[in-house]
Every structure is written in C-alpha cells, then in structure tokens.
Image 1 (cartoon, rainbow, N blue to C red):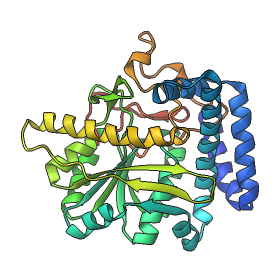
Image 2: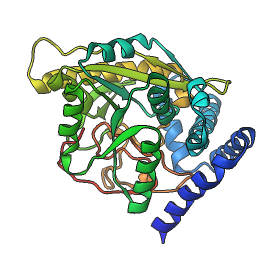
Image 3: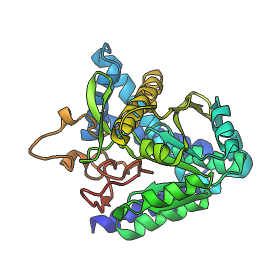
Length: 340
C-alpha cells in the first residue's frame, strides 16, 4: 500500500504540477515547504543539525531561518522537476546560468572525457537538461533502483526525456559502462556528496569525518577523464546559478586507492566551498556524518525512511549507489558491491 501511495504521489506531481502556471507552482511549492518546516519533522531537524556544521556560529534563530529557506529551496527543486518535461528548449536555456563553464567546454573539446561531480544542491536535473539542450551534449548517469519498480521506471523515463542515459546502480556493472563512455570522450554526471556504505571514502568535511563515494575519482584515474566539481544554487530570480570548479588532477604518486582518496578529499573541499556560500540550497535532510548515526539503527534508520516530512524524496543520480537516498522510495541495495 505504501509503495502504491508513493508512486501515485509522484505520478500526481508530474501529471498535475507541470500543467500549472509557473507563478501558481512557485506559490504552491512555498506553501508546502512552509507547512513542512512548521511541523518540525525529523527531516527538518536533521537539516538544521547539518546546517549547524556548515554555519557553526549561527544562532538558533539563524539556523531556523536557514532551514526554512532550505525547505523552500527543496520544494523549488520539486516544482521545477515536475514541470521540466513541459519546459521549452528556450526556457531550459534561460533557466540556468553557469559560471566558469570553460572548464567543461574545454574538457569536452579535448576528447578525454569528463566526469562532473555534484552535491545535493539546487536542481541537478535542470543543470543536466541545460547541458543536453544548450551544449547539445548527451551524458550518462547512474540512478539507484527504487521500489516500487514503477516509480523507478518513472524517474528513468523522466530523465531520459531530458536527454540523459540512465544506468541502474545495482550489481556493480555500471562502472564498466561509465568507463567506456569516458574513454570514448563522453560525459558522465554523478551526485557524490554522501556514501555511508563500506566502500565510502572518509573525508574531512566541515570539521568532521564524513564519507563520500570513490566512484568519480576512480573513473577519472582509470580512464584519464577530467574530474570537475560543480556546485549549484538559487537566488531571488527564476534562474538557477552554477559554477564549474577547477579540475581535480590525479596525483602523480600513490596507489590507486591513495589517489582516489586524495581526489575525493579535493572534491569534498570544492563541495564545502559551494555549500558554505549557499547553505540553504544544500538539500541534505539525512544524516551525513557517521558520528551522527545511531549505532543501534545504522544507516537505514527511521530518519532515512519515507515521507516523514510529508515531502517526496530527492532521488539520487548516484556517485557510488550505496546508502545515499533521501527518505522516500525504498532502495534495492547490493551491500559490499562497489558502485560508481
């Protein structure tokens, strides 16, 4: 029953919200966000706890202000995502402004392949649609396999409709496909700021030890592709903003594991810079730092289960595929399998 309800809610979003006039959709998203914030559910409280690490000198009123802005940003993501399939190409092109895009364009022109790695900021689906529309470049990504299967199919169809090639993360076979795409000079995009699996790489992140996926660094090191961090944010305009950070190079020395660890730390540093500048647009409503986990419950604790805030999950285009999904649809996990 719960799976059918979840699928129906997403279907209602895509079927109804995309037909609304944009000002109505914007207003509806803000109302839903404010109501969820006022209920002070587990996701909102976790968001505030995460923001307290990002802005350690923030007072309680300031944290509350940031979390409210964060929920509004989160619902803006959903309103945009439900409406994206109905956007014209011109609307997509004009809906995103990318700074330092020469890093991406130069990397693609070099023919060596490019890995774009992003945190859960603003709307990475809109950024992807802009890449396929404005740059005319298709790309490959990885999505966690959601339950019910019909919901996973909805997200695959949605993202393929935006011009993306979507691979399921289960079974570990995605890494080989991604590597082939990169060796052919292609583009791979991965969300890469949370991985609580056994294969996650420990990084220093806002004063604590967190885990992030090794997949983006491993792909770059093994294929010679360019690894580029990207951060996204909203302002008061209808246009989403983004920045491509300088390339992360493969260290000249060290084992593959040591190289991947060093590159993942650089990736975390770039993410931290973007998140610190725009903390309200980091949609991290789950536990990220292992020190925050309940040892008795583990990564799959109740806080990471669905609709605790009355809000849908922000599904991952994953960087490694293990233990990162927001509350919502249930995951088909393959523990112990290293996934990009």
